[in-house]
Image 1: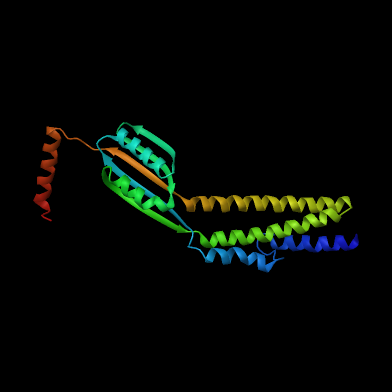
Image 2 (image 1 turned 120 degrees about the vertical axis):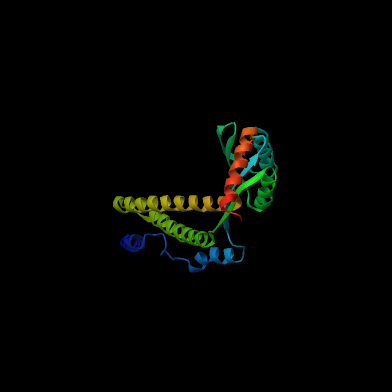
Length: 219
């Protein structure tokens, strides 16, 4: 029993000093596997896009976009109805279809603005998966110690460490899943606005503005 307690204390102190998240290296070969596998694949990129278009019929275009999202197996996160002349949509579409989807949206009206952002999360995912390997190895060792422990004090210490490690594993796995979901599904924010239709006075005012501007600026 003394031997078990000494082994437990050594591992416990090791976990406390290192935070259990990055320095638990019980299986160096296993911990290197995620990095090797990921480096053999393409980089993991999180893409998001934003586009604003002006259209003649906002409601009709919203319906067309919803059908387009279904066609590519995406989904609508939310729709914000400001009024009948302006609608904002938050969408998720497969990353592989993002470029074609954006072209399709742009073809439905006049493009006011369009942007694309890309974030490389490959290194973060590699780090996360390596930490998971190490944490799970540490958890397995504590479970073996728990099976052998017969003193209440030792059992309580081991169970406390197991709880702490499991909470960290759950948190890291949740982050890992979130990143991979973001890689596979790109976010697209779409704003659809009604084209302005000027009356006779409106066109007259615009013409006067153009004339006055040309008096000061030729090009």
